Amino acid sequence: MGFIIAAAVAAAVIAFCFLCYKKAPPTQAIVVTGFGLSRPKVVCGRGVFVLPIVQRADRLNMRLLKIDVKTPETGVKTKEGVSLWLDSVVTVQVYSENSTVSDEEVRNAGYDDIRKYINSRQQAAISNFLGMDEAHINEKINDVLQGNLREIVSEMTVDQILTNRKQMAVSVVENARPDLAKMGLEVVTFNVQDVKDAVDAMGHNHGVIEAIGVEQEELVKKRASIAKAEAERDVSCAKAAAAMAANEKEIEAQTAIAQRNNELELAKSKLKAEADKAAADANAAGMIQTNLRAKEVKESEADAEIARQKKMVDLAAQEAEVQQRKLDAEVRKQADAELYRRQKEAEAQKYEAERAAEAAKFAKQQEAEGIALVGKAEAEAIRQKGLAEAEAMKQKAEAYKQYNDAAVAEMMIKVLPEIARSVAQPLSSIDKVISMSAAIVHRI
Image 1 (cartoon, one colour):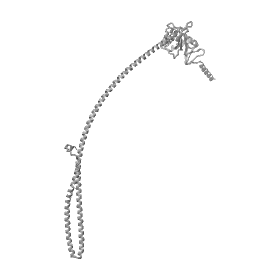
Image 2 (cartoon, rainbow, N blue to C red):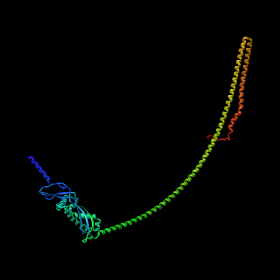
Image 3 (cartoon, rainbow, N blue to C red):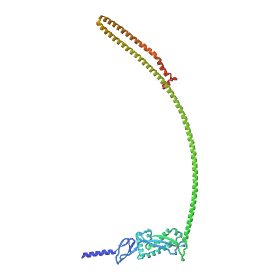
Image 4 (cartoon, helix red, strand yellow):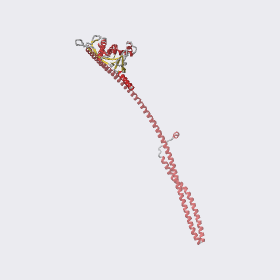
């Protein structure tokens, strides 16, 4: 039973907490007032406990509010007294922790802490707008901004408003910021959408903006025409200057070309003179070399001729010596052959004689067997005869020997004229004989 009661009490406590807990989204703020709070408590983007019956939770819109601020149809007067109709758009929001606040703004409000200043601005927004719908909020803000817009426009000229809308917007924001801050609102942006001529009570406008537009258009056209004329003038001047510069450059180029051509001709003439001189020098050197070469050739030919003559003489001498040796060899060969023949004939005759003597001796011996005395006598006779014949052959051989030396001498005498002709025949082709000095002979 006690457990059930405890569970029931816990469930009741949990249900009570759920009922009391409130959570604020980032675009809204929960304003808690009532028991235990000396001033409203503002909670944005987090949760808070709100006690039922004794405390109250209201919601304040923290989103950006876009407000269209337009002046009346009759317009507002500028510094020049011209009535203009302006259409502008402003965005505001309640001060939050993300608001941009300068230290000067905090000090001017009498605070030394930004959080305290932001909290005070939130309290002001709660006092002015809590429970109010967006239409009433826009109307209230519009009244404040129109007053600030009139104030700024009255300090500016039409030309400044038309040409410097950004500065006008900055001036309106700076002028309206303190008034809106007292209401708890922060100006985020302010933009001027349109500027027109205001309408009078009869429904007519003064056409100032249109006239300024025409004036500006004509001024722009004039400036464009002037700029075009100046551009054309600049183009013409530039063309003339370019043509003059081109002409000068062309003259400079022609002059430079003429100078270069002159230098080229001079260089060609100089080179030709140098080439002619070099050719003359080369021709002279060539002639000198030719003469020297011809001299060397003649000297070489003379040397060659001398060498040839000397060689011919040497050849003639060698040929004569060869002929002499040949002749000696032929004569000696013939003499040796004759001697050999005669020796062989003598040996043959001796052999025949010996054979005949032996035959005769044999015959005589045969006969001597029959006739001893006759044979002995005849044998003696034959011996004597053989001795006599041998002596005769010996003397004949000596005669042949002596005859051989005489024959050789006689044959030498017979062939000497032929040898002389063989030696004289090469020498007969020599045209002339040059006598050489010792130096030339030494050089050869």
